Image (cartoon, rainbow, N blue to C red):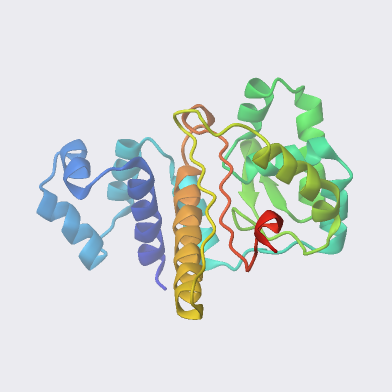
Length: 241
């Protein structure tokens, strides 16, 4: 994949995350919509035009390059046992890893979570030593993992947090305007079960793509959301004669 193609693909991710159409971008760039489409279709992207697009989207070149790099270079999707043990043993380290993996900067963490600069710097250094991030000049953070990693089945994170997180999530009210809860049980054929399982997989993939795009947004424009997608053969004990 060419470098131009990678950068354009990253720009498309930004457009999608911000809900900006080619027509919207054309107005911001004072170009015709056809001209914008030609840039993407013919990969006719100059450095000057890329800088103008970044300014129009209120992102910098580093962010675009980081997205392009994540897509091109295989990133860690499952941590080693040592990495998970380090996160499981230090709640604050786990929290900071979660935040940087969702696009937070060092300054965001210090100001919005009200943590001291030394504490945050120490945690980021530890994450760097663990190979989960790379720290660069001007406190730039390069992620070494995919945005939503898979925790090891039966590993340290699951062992320490599974029961607590599931209890907190499920045993709460879902009656707010931004919440939704559907718990249903029916009888299905194997064919229908397979179709449902495939639909859940597609929905999960769509949610991950949205989260990756939204990682570019500032913290104040995002909210932590718990999304559970699950199904399994099951019969409520009260109905089991």
